[in-house]
Image (tube, rainbow, N blue to C red; front, top):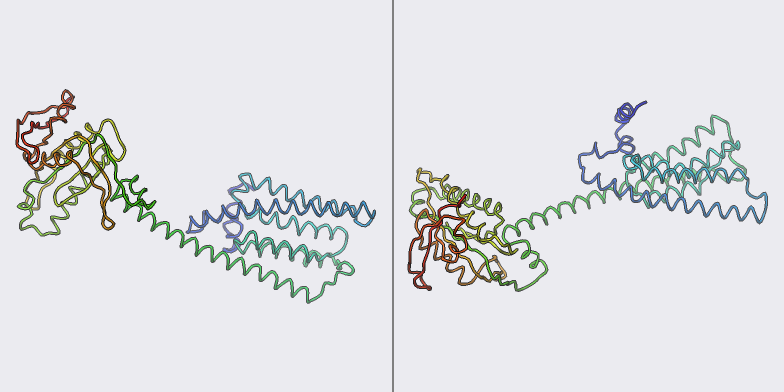
Amino acid sequence: MNLSTLTQRLHQLPGALREALFPVDRLHPNLDYVTWRQGFMRRRLNLSLRLGILAYLTFILMRWILAWVNPGSVPASWFAMAGTALLGLVICLVLHRRDLGRRYPALIFLGCSWSITLVEQIWATLRGVAFPGVFAWTLVFLVQATLLPMRWPLHLISQVGLLGYYLVVNSLLGLGEAAGSMWDATLWLYLFWFCAICDLSVFLYERLQRAEFSARQALEAEQEKSERLLLNILPESVARQLKQDQRTIAEHFPEVTVLFADIVGFTELSAGVPPEDMVRLLNQVFSTFDHLAERHGLEKIKTIGDSYMVVGGLPVERADHLEAIANMALDMQRAIAQFQTPRQTPFNMRIGINTGPVVAGVIGVKKFIYDLWGDTVNTASRMESQGLPGMIQVTDAVYTRLQGRYEFKERGTIYVKGKGQMQTYLLLRRME
Protein backbone atom coordinates (compact mmCIF):
# COMPACT_ATOMS: atom_id res chain seq x y z
CA MET A 1 0.00 0.00 0.00
CA ASN A 2 1.55 3.33 -1.06
CA LEU A 3 1.44 6.58 0.92
CA SER A 4 -1.34 8.04 -1.22
CA THR A 5 -3.62 5.05 -0.61
CA LEU A 6 -2.82 5.10 3.11
CA THR A 7 -3.68 8.80 3.29
CA GLN A 8 -7.03 8.21 1.58
CA ARG A 9 -7.83 5.38 4.01
CA LEU A 10 -6.98 7.55 7.00
CA HIS A 11 -9.24 10.33 5.74
CA GLN A 12 -12.11 7.82 5.62
CA LEU A 13 -11.85 7.10 9.36
CA PRO A 14 -14.51 8.43 11.76
CA GLY A 15 -14.01 12.04 12.80
CA ALA A 16 -12.70 11.57 16.37
CA LEU A 17 -10.37 8.72 15.35
CA ARG A 18 -9.11 10.68 12.34
CA GLU A 19 -8.59 13.74 14.56
CA ALA A 20 -6.49 11.62 16.89
CA LEU A 21 -4.36 9.80 14.32
CA PHE A 22 -4.07 12.01 11.27
CA PRO A 23 -2.05 15.25 11.06
CA VAL A 24 -5.02 17.53 11.74
CA ASP A 25 -3.21 20.69 10.67
CA ARG A 26 -4.67 19.99 7.23
CA LEU A 27 -8.15 19.28 8.52
CA HIS A 28 -8.85 21.70 11.32
CA PRO A 29 -10.02 25.23 10.47
CA ASN A 30 -8.06 26.83 13.33
CA LEU A 31 -4.65 26.29 11.76
CA ASP A 32 -2.76 28.51 14.17
CA TYR A 33 -4.01 26.63 17.21
CA VAL A 34 -3.39 23.24 15.64
CA THR A 35 0.15 24.24 14.69
CA TRP A 36 0.78 25.33 18.26
CA ARG A 37 -0.76 22.12 19.57
CA GLN A 38 1.42 19.98 17.31
CA GLY A 39 4.52 21.79 18.55
CA PHE A 40 3.43 21.44 22.18
CA MET A 41 2.74 17.74 21.71
CA ARG A 42 6.11 17.13 20.07
CA ARG A 43 7.96 18.84 22.92
CA ARG A 44 6.05 16.86 25.54
CA LEU A 45 6.53 13.62 23.61
CA ASN A 46 10.26 14.20 23.64
CA LEU A 47 10.16 14.64 27.42
CA SER A 48 7.86 11.64 27.92
CA LEU A 49 10.02 9.32 25.85
CA ARG A 50 13.17 10.31 27.73
CA LEU A 51 11.42 9.81 31.08
CA GLY A 52 10.05 6.46 29.91
CA ILE A 53 13.50 5.26 28.85
CA LEU A 54 15.02 6.44 32.13
CA ALA A 55 12.24 4.75 34.14
CA TYR A 56 12.69 1.44 32.34
CA LEU A 57 16.43 1.56 32.89
CA THR A 58 15.83 1.97 36.64
CA PHE A 59 13.40 -1.00 36.70
CA ILE A 60 15.80 -3.15 34.74
CA LEU A 61 18.65 -2.20 37.07
CA MET A 62 16.54 -2.95 40.14
CA ARG A 63 15.48 -6.36 38.78
CA TRP A 64 19.06 -7.15 37.82
CA ILE A 65 20.21 -6.39 41.37
CA LEU A 66 17.41 -8.59 42.77
CA ALA A 67 18.35 -11.40 40.39
CA TRP A 68 22.01 -11.06 41.40
CA VAL A 69 21.20 -11.08 45.13
CA ASN A 70 18.60 -13.83 44.85
CA PRO A 71 19.19 -15.93 41.71
CA GLY A 72 16.03 -17.27 40.14
CA SER A 73 13.77 -14.62 41.68
CA VAL A 74 13.36 -12.84 38.34
CA PRO A 75 12.52 -14.90 35.20
CA ALA A 76 15.02 -14.44 32.39
CA SER A 77 12.12 -13.80 30.04
CA TRP A 78 11.30 -10.68 32.03
CA PHE A 79 14.55 -9.10 30.95
CA ALA A 80 13.69 -9.96 27.34
CA MET A 81 10.29 -8.30 27.78
CA ALA A 82 11.76 -5.21 29.46
CA GLY A 83 14.46 -4.96 26.80
CA THR A 84 11.81 -5.14 24.07
CA ALA A 85 9.78 -2.38 25.71
CA LEU A 86 12.92 -0.29 26.14
CA LEU A 87 13.83 -0.87 22.50
CA GLY A 88 10.31 0.25 21.49
CA LEU A 89 10.76 3.52 23.41
CA VAL A 90 14.16 4.11 21.83
CA ILE A 91 12.72 3.48 18.35
CA CYS A 92 9.88 5.91 19.10
CA LEU A 93 12.43 8.52 20.20
CA VAL A 94 14.42 8.07 17.00
CA LEU A 95 11.29 8.24 14.82
CA HIS A 96 10.12 11.27 16.81
CA ARG A 97 13.08 13.22 15.41
CA ARG A 98 12.45 12.11 11.84
CA ASP A 99 9.93 13.31 9.29
CA LEU A 100 7.47 10.57 10.32
CA GLY A 101 7.44 11.85 13.90
CA ARG A 102 7.01 15.46 12.78
CA ARG A 103 4.06 14.56 10.56
CA TYR A 104 2.41 11.92 12.75
CA PRO A 105 3.12 12.61 16.44
CA ALA A 106 -0.04 10.66 17.31
CA LEU A 107 1.61 7.43 16.12
CA ILE A 108 4.64 8.15 18.30
CA PHE A 109 2.28 8.76 21.24
CA LEU A 110 0.61 5.38 20.79
CA GLY A 111 3.94 3.67 20.19
CA CYS A 112 5.28 5.09 23.44
CA SER A 113 2.15 4.12 25.41
CA TRP A 114 1.89 0.58 24.07
CA SER A 115 5.64 -0.07 24.33
CA ILE A 116 5.20 0.16 28.09
CA THR A 117 1.80 -1.49 28.52
CA LEU A 118 1.10 -3.80 25.58
CA VAL A 119 4.54 -5.43 25.38
CA GLU A 120 4.09 -6.67 28.93
CA GLN A 121 0.70 -8.15 28.00
CA ILE A 122 2.13 -9.97 25.00
CA TRP A 123 4.91 -11.34 27.25
CA ALA A 124 2.28 -12.61 29.71
CA THR A 125 0.29 -14.20 26.87
CA LEU A 126 3.41 -16.03 25.68
CA ARG A 127 3.80 -17.36 29.20
CA GLY A 128 0.20 -18.62 29.10
CA VAL A 129 -1.38 -16.26 31.62
CA ALA A 130 -3.54 -13.14 31.57
CA PHE A 131 -1.58 -10.58 33.55
CA PRO A 132 -3.54 -7.47 34.66
CA GLY A 133 -0.72 -4.92 35.05
CA VAL A 134 -2.84 -2.46 36.98
CA PHE A 135 0.14 -0.58 38.41
CA ALA A 136 1.82 -0.09 35.02
CA TRP A 137 -1.47 0.76 33.35
CA THR A 138 -2.55 3.43 35.82
CA LEU A 139 0.97 4.88 35.97
CA VAL A 140 1.15 5.18 32.17
CA PHE A 141 -2.36 6.65 31.86
CA LEU A 142 -1.65 9.18 34.61
CA VAL A 143 1.69 10.20 33.10
CA GLN A 144 0.06 10.59 29.68
CA ALA A 145 -2.69 12.79 31.06
CA THR A 146 -0.16 14.86 33.02
CA LEU A 147 2.58 15.32 30.43
CA LEU A 148 0.47 15.16 27.27
CA PRO A 149 -2.88 16.82 28.09
CA MET A 150 -3.84 17.13 24.42
CA ARG A 151 -6.13 15.28 22.01
CA TRP A 152 -8.16 13.18 24.44
CA PRO A 153 -9.19 10.66 21.73
CA LEU A 154 -5.56 9.53 21.63
CA HIS A 155 -5.65 8.74 25.33
CA LEU A 156 -8.89 6.83 24.85
CA ILE A 157 -7.41 4.87 21.93
CA SER A 158 -4.35 3.87 23.97
CA GLN A 159 -6.59 2.69 26.83
CA VAL A 160 -9.10 0.85 24.65
CA GLY A 161 -6.32 -0.77 22.63
CA LEU A 162 -4.65 -2.14 25.76
CA LEU A 163 -7.84 -3.30 27.48
CA GLY A 164 -9.17 -4.65 24.18
CA TYR A 165 -6.08 -6.82 23.82
CA TYR A 166 -6.36 -8.00 27.41
CA LEU A 167 -10.03 -8.95 27.13
CA VAL A 168 -10.23 -10.21 23.54
CA VAL A 169 -6.93 -12.07 23.15
CA ASN A 170 -6.98 -13.63 26.59
CA SER A 171 -10.62 -14.67 26.13
CA LEU A 172 -9.94 -16.20 22.71
CA LEU A 173 -6.96 -18.11 24.09
CA GLY A 174 -8.82 -19.03 27.29
CA LEU A 175 -6.04 -17.72 29.50
CA GLY A 176 -6.66 -17.25 33.18
CA GLU A 177 -5.27 -14.55 35.38
CA ALA A 178 -2.01 -15.11 37.19
CA ALA A 179 -2.37 -16.59 40.64
CA GLY A 180 -2.71 -14.05 43.40
CA SER A 181 -3.50 -11.19 41.02
CA MET A 182 -6.48 -10.07 43.14
CA TRP A 183 -8.18 -8.93 39.96
CA ASP A 184 -11.89 -8.53 40.61
CA ALA A 185 -14.86 -6.36 39.69
CA THR A 186 -13.78 -3.64 42.13
CA LEU A 187 -10.49 -3.21 40.30
CA TRP A 188 -12.29 -3.10 36.97
CA LEU A 189 -14.53 -0.33 38.30
CA TYR A 190 -11.49 1.45 39.70
CA LEU A 191 -9.71 1.22 36.34
CA PHE A 192 -12.79 2.47 34.50
CA TRP A 193 -13.09 5.57 36.65
CA PHE A 194 -9.36 6.15 36.60
CA CYS A 195 -9.36 6.16 32.77
CA ALA A 196 -12.52 8.24 32.62
CA ILE A 197 -11.09 10.90 34.93
CA CYS A 198 -7.81 11.00 33.00
CA ASP A 199 -9.64 11.47 29.70
CA LEU A 200 -11.97 14.07 31.17
CA SER A 201 -9.05 16.04 32.60
CA VAL A 202 -7.32 16.02 29.20
CA PHE A 203 -10.54 17.12 27.50
CA LEU A 204 -11.08 19.99 29.95
CA TYR A 205 -7.44 21.04 29.85
CA GLU A 206 -7.45 21.22 26.08
CA ARG A 207 -10.63 23.28 26.08
CA LEU A 208 -8.95 25.65 28.51
CA GLN A 209 -5.84 25.80 26.33
CA ARG A 210 -7.89 26.46 23.22
CA ALA A 211 -9.75 29.30 24.95
CA GLU A 212 -6.49 30.72 26.31
CA PHE A 213 -4.86 30.46 22.90
CA SER A 214 -7.77 32.28 21.26
CA ALA A 215 -7.66 34.98 23.94
CA ARG A 216 -3.90 35.33 23.49
CA GLN A 217 -4.32 35.60 19.73
CA ALA A 218 -6.98 38.27 20.17
CA LEU A 219 -4.71 40.16 22.58
CA GLU A 220 -1.77 39.92 20.18
CA ALA A 221 -3.98 41.13 17.33
CA GLU A 222 -5.05 44.13 19.39
CA GLN A 223 -1.45 44.82 20.38
CA GLU A 224 -0.40 44.61 16.74
CA LYS A 225 -3.22 46.98 15.78
CA SER A 226 -2.14 49.41 18.50
CA GLU A 227 1.45 49.10 17.33
CA ARG A 228 0.44 49.92 13.75
CA LEU A 229 -1.58 52.91 14.93
CA LEU A 230 1.35 54.16 17.00
CA LEU A 231 3.75 53.72 14.06
CA ASN A 232 1.34 55.72 11.90
CA ILE A 233 1.82 58.62 14.32
CA LEU A 234 5.44 58.26 15.39
CA PRO A 235 8.68 56.93 13.91
CA GLU A 236 9.55 53.43 15.08
CA SER A 237 12.53 54.49 17.20
CA VAL A 238 10.46 57.17 18.95
CA ALA A 239 7.57 54.78 19.55
CA ARG A 240 10.01 52.34 21.12
CA GLN A 241 11.25 55.05 23.51
CA LEU A 242 7.68 55.96 24.46
CA LYS A 243 6.86 52.33 25.21
CA GLN A 244 9.87 52.27 27.53
CA ASP A 245 8.19 55.12 29.43
CA GLN A 246 10.77 57.70 28.49
CA ARG A 247 9.12 60.98 29.44
CA THR A 248 11.11 63.50 27.40
CA ILE A 249 12.07 62.68 23.83
CA ALA A 250 14.19 65.28 22.07
CA GLU A 251 17.15 64.92 19.74
CA HIS A 252 19.31 67.32 17.76
CA PHE A 253 20.01 66.56 14.12
CA PRO A 254 22.84 68.60 12.56
CA GLU A 255 21.47 68.40 9.03
CA VAL A 256 18.10 67.41 7.62
CA THR A 257 15.90 68.64 4.79
CA VAL A 258 12.38 69.89 5.44
CA LEU A 259 9.57 70.17 2.87
CA PHE A 260 6.28 72.03 3.25
CA ALA A 261 3.52 71.75 0.64
CA ASP A 262 0.20 73.59 0.47
CA ILE A 263 -2.74 73.36 -1.93
CA VAL A 264 -3.23 76.78 -3.47
CA GLY A 265 -6.65 78.32 -2.81
CA PHE A 266 -8.03 75.26 -1.10
CA THR A 267 -10.65 77.29 0.79
CA GLU A 268 -12.00 78.78 -2.43
CA LEU A 269 -11.87 75.41 -4.21
CA SER A 270 -13.87 73.73 -1.46
CA ALA A 271 -16.61 76.37 -1.40
CA GLY A 272 -19.94 74.86 -2.34
CA VAL A 273 -18.53 71.30 -2.42
CA PRO A 274 -20.04 68.85 0.11
CA PRO A 275 -17.59 68.50 3.04
CA GLU A 276 -17.56 64.71 2.76
CA ASP A 277 -16.49 64.85 -0.89
CA MET A 278 -13.75 67.39 -0.22
CA VAL A 279 -12.36 65.48 2.76
CA ARG A 280 -12.43 62.25 0.72
CA LEU A 281 -10.53 63.92 -2.10
CA LEU A 282 -8.00 65.49 0.27
CA ASN A 283 -7.47 62.09 1.85
CA GLN A 284 -6.71 60.61 -1.56
CA VAL A 285 -4.18 63.36 -2.28
CA PHE A 286 -2.37 63.01 1.05
CA SER A 287 -2.47 59.22 0.89
CA THR A 288 -0.66 59.48 -2.44
CA PHE A 289 1.93 61.72 -0.78
CA ASP A 290 2.29 59.20 2.05
CA HIS A 291 3.13 56.48 -0.47
CA LEU A 292 5.67 58.76 -2.10
CA ALA A 293 7.28 59.50 1.27
CA GLU A 294 7.50 55.79 2.02
CA ARG A 295 8.98 55.09 -1.41
CA HIS A 296 11.66 57.76 -0.97
CA GLY A 297 12.44 56.71 2.61
CA LEU A 298 11.26 59.96 4.17
CA GLU A 299 9.44 60.70 7.41
CA LYS A 300 6.04 62.33 7.21
CA ILE A 301 5.66 64.72 10.13
CA LYS A 302 2.10 66.01 9.94
CA THR A 303 -0.70 67.55 7.95
CA ILE A 304 -2.38 70.80 8.99
CA GLY A 305 -5.53 71.45 7.01
CA ASP A 306 -4.41 71.29 3.38
CA SER A 307 -0.67 71.58 4.26
CA TYR A 308 1.71 68.63 4.21
CA MET A 309 5.09 68.39 5.99
CA VAL A 310 7.78 65.78 5.38
CA VAL A 311 11.46 65.56 6.35
CA GLY A 312 14.50 63.64 5.19
CA GLY A 313 17.46 62.64 7.35
CA LEU A 314 15.69 61.70 10.58
CA PRO A 315 15.06 59.85 12.80
CA VAL A 316 17.64 57.73 10.95
CA GLU A 317 20.33 59.91 9.45
CA ARG A 318 21.11 59.51 5.74
CA ALA A 319 23.59 61.27 3.48
CA ASP A 320 21.21 61.76 0.53
CA HIS A 321 18.32 63.36 2.43
CA LEU A 322 18.42 66.48 0.26
CA GLU A 323 18.21 64.52 -3.00
CA ALA A 324 15.40 62.37 -1.60
CA ILE A 325 13.34 65.46 -0.68
CA ALA A 326 13.99 67.06 -4.09
CA ASN A 327 12.79 63.90 -5.83
CA MET A 328 9.78 63.77 -3.52
CA ALA A 329 8.85 67.37 -4.41
CA LEU A 330 9.03 66.68 -8.13
CA ASP A 331 6.92 63.54 -7.71
CA MET A 332 4.37 65.50 -5.67
CA GLN A 333 4.01 67.98 -8.52
CA ARG A 334 3.32 65.16 -10.97
CA ALA A 335 0.91 63.47 -8.54
CA ILE A 336 -1.15 66.59 -7.77
CA ALA A 337 -1.74 67.13 -11.48
CA GLN A 338 -3.82 63.94 -11.53
CA PHE A 339 -6.39 65.35 -9.09
CA GLN A 340 -9.20 67.85 -9.50
CA THR A 341 -12.22 68.96 -7.52
CA PRO A 342 -15.73 67.61 -8.17
CA ARG A 343 -16.24 70.77 -10.26
CA GLN A 344 -13.36 69.69 -12.52
CA THR A 345 -11.07 72.40 -11.12
CA PRO A 346 -7.44 71.23 -11.06
CA PHE A 347 -5.38 71.38 -7.89
CA ASN A 348 -2.22 73.44 -7.68
CA MET A 349 0.50 73.42 -5.02
CA ARG A 350 3.21 75.56 -3.53
CA ILE A 351 6.21 73.66 -2.19
CA GLY A 352 9.04 75.03 -0.07
CA ILE A 353 12.31 73.31 0.88
CA ASN A 354 15.14 74.16 3.24
CA THR A 355 18.03 72.21 4.74
CA GLY A 356 19.89 72.59 8.01
CA PRO A 357 19.86 71.61 11.71
CA VAL A 358 16.68 70.89 13.68
CA VAL A 359 15.53 69.62 17.03
CA ALA A 360 13.00 66.78 16.83
CA GLY A 361 10.94 65.24 19.58
CA VAL A 362 7.62 64.59 21.26
CA ILE A 363 5.92 66.98 23.64
CA GLY A 364 2.78 66.65 25.73
CA VAL A 365 1.07 63.64 27.28
CA LYS A 366 -2.16 63.56 25.24
CA LYS A 367 -2.59 63.51 21.47
CA PHE A 368 1.15 63.94 21.17
CA ILE A 369 2.91 64.12 17.81
CA TYR A 370 6.47 63.95 16.60
CA ASP A 371 7.45 67.46 15.56
CA LEU A 372 10.42 69.59 14.50
CA TRP A 373 11.67 72.94 15.78
CA GLY A 374 14.30 75.40 14.67
CA ASP A 375 15.13 78.08 12.14
CA THR A 376 15.42 75.46 9.39
CA VAL A 377 11.77 74.52 9.86
CA ASN A 378 10.57 78.12 9.98
CA THR A 379 12.48 79.01 6.81
CA ALA A 380 11.13 75.97 4.93
CA SER A 381 7.62 77.06 5.92
CA ARG A 382 8.32 80.58 4.61
CA MET A 383 9.63 79.12 1.34
CA GLU A 384 6.23 77.47 0.87
CA SER A 385 3.97 80.30 2.07
CA GLN A 386 5.84 82.93 0.02
CA GLY A 387 6.36 80.69 -2.98
CA LEU A 388 4.68 80.68 -6.36
CA PRO A 389 1.70 78.47 -7.29
CA GLY A 390 2.81 75.30 -9.04
CA MET A 391 6.48 75.89 -8.15
CA ILE A 392 9.07 74.45 -5.73
CA GLN A 393 10.90 77.27 -3.98
CA VAL A 394 14.19 76.47 -2.24
CA THR A 395 16.80 78.36 -0.26
CA ASP A 396 20.32 79.16 -1.37
CA ALA A 397 21.62 76.31 0.84
CA VAL A 398 19.53 73.80 -1.14
CA TYR A 399 20.55 75.31 -4.48
CA THR A 400 24.26 75.21 -3.59
CA ARG A 401 24.10 71.51 -2.69
CA LEU A 402 22.03 70.38 -5.68
CA GLN A 403 23.23 72.59 -8.55
CA GLY A 404 24.71 70.62 -11.39
CA ARG A 405 22.41 67.65 -10.73
CA TYR A 406 19.08 69.48 -10.79
CA GLU A 407 17.89 72.33 -12.96
CA PHE A 408 16.96 75.56 -11.15
CA LYS A 409 15.63 78.96 -12.07
CA GLU A 410 16.72 81.95 -10.05
CA ARG A 411 13.77 83.76 -8.57
CA GLY A 412 15.80 86.55 -7.02
CA THR A 413 15.80 88.17 -3.64
CA ILE A 414 12.59 88.18 -1.64
CA TYR A 415 11.73 89.44 1.81
CA VAL A 416 11.21 86.60 4.28
CA LYS A 417 9.55 87.35 7.60
CA GLY A 418 12.01 86.94 10.43
CA LYS A 419 14.95 86.53 8.02
CA GLY A 420 14.98 89.68 5.91
CA GLN A 421 16.10 89.57 2.28
CA MET A 422 16.90 86.07 1.01
CA GLN A 423 18.09 84.71 -2.31
CA THR A 424 15.72 81.93 -3.49
CA TYR A 425 15.51 79.55 -6.42
CA LEU A 426 12.85 77.47 -8.15
CA LEU A 427 13.53 73.75 -8.56
CA LEU A 428 12.46 72.69 -12.06
CA ARG A 429 13.61 69.15 -12.72
CA ARG A 430 16.28 66.56 -12.20
CA MET A 431 19.01 66.58 -14.83
CA GLU A 432 19.58 63.34 -16.69
